[in-house]
Image (cartoon, rainbow, N blue to C red):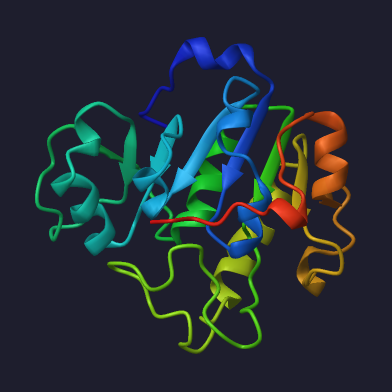
Length: 216
């Protein structure tokens, strides 16, 4: 790969990959800073600054550029002629042509972390409706819209986890959450609860009673 990441971050053997499914609201974003290298997606930049922000949808990339976020932060995307500015934007070469979440997971997986924790990869909708912490905001669907088809996201996640067999992956979910058949029985992937995660990273989650809701 042509890109190099901040070597100061390589002291960590832990990465956090943040999708934007609503289960991620149980994660205290500020509390995981310094505990690993953080990869985020799309509108996460509106409320939090990950170490690396991945966005592949052209409209979202252009929103990030319009906000000026790319000038002082690492923003990664796929080459696309519709992107309004190429300056200070990092382009994957080669690129996968995948969705943002799986692309962020693939990006992190190339950096030889020992442990990769995955949040907000919910796949299913909520009661059949659109599942995203940024629903009802600019560049996102409405919360009462039908759930988005997740088959491609799921296949892309499966491919990454199976390719990087030396990495221990942990998909952090709420109790009783959907676990796709394709992600079951993979030796280097565990599905753990937020309580399990809290035991290892104290103070990094909210209780369900004090669940953080995005105000964006």
